[in-house]
Length: 302
Image 1 (cartoon, rainbow, N blue to C red):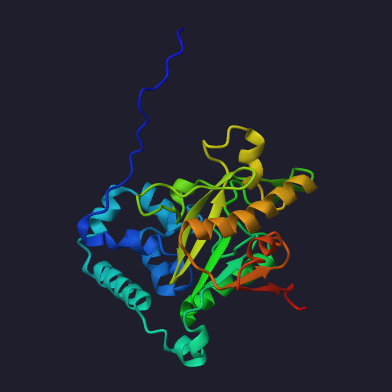
Image 2 (tube, rainbow, N blue to C red):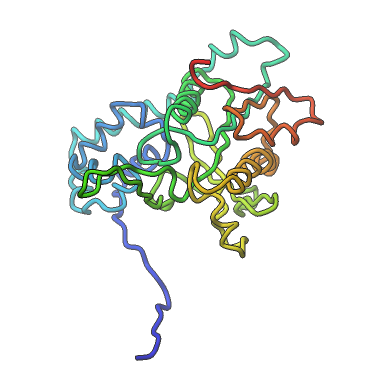
């Protein structure tokens, strides 16, 4: 048999009817993950599918039956619920940041804080965290969004993230890794002013990917791109806390130096840099010659 390869590949996904198009905007802003009314909106579409999709609204909207979307589009109660959630999100995004303006002085009112962390625990469907350190980082972003603090998060986008535990037939704990499907997560590629994906370079290439956490942007660097010819370079953002000491150093270089260069490429002028523990310690070399402040966040409880 000859080797027959496809000429084109197509992905068929449900089409959102105009009355429920706002579901897409809500799904792509992680504000939904700490807003019960928004979570209940997606549950209302299909409770069983919400659980099957791991509480991932982007994946859910990609696999839900078209008939259910059509039914929701003519359901007055659902449309009223959608309108309420959408209006609340719009109001939140345009909301007054009076708290922040009230507590800062004239010298710091234009301050932008860049928060570097090896992991961010925002929601279970975005597997880029392992435990307390990540949950702390995620809560920082959520709180900064609620308070109007001018914060931007910087981290790594792991292809497999942290391992998941399971028991084998003998009852022994085992570790397993699952690939993150970036196309079905509340993420999008960060683009420059010309619409081109932003790529930064250290000893290998990393591409920032963008996630919106309420009013706080989060940029995650991904090395699994065509610009990297070597598989070992693509694997730098494969697993959280995986690999040997050399891999950890590569990840820390990418996070600290690559993250700083990503902010420059995105024209984000940070004035304060905050490191969540020492995983981004190489950041200090990048900001040493600037007039910026750099702070270290200790482990929770210390």
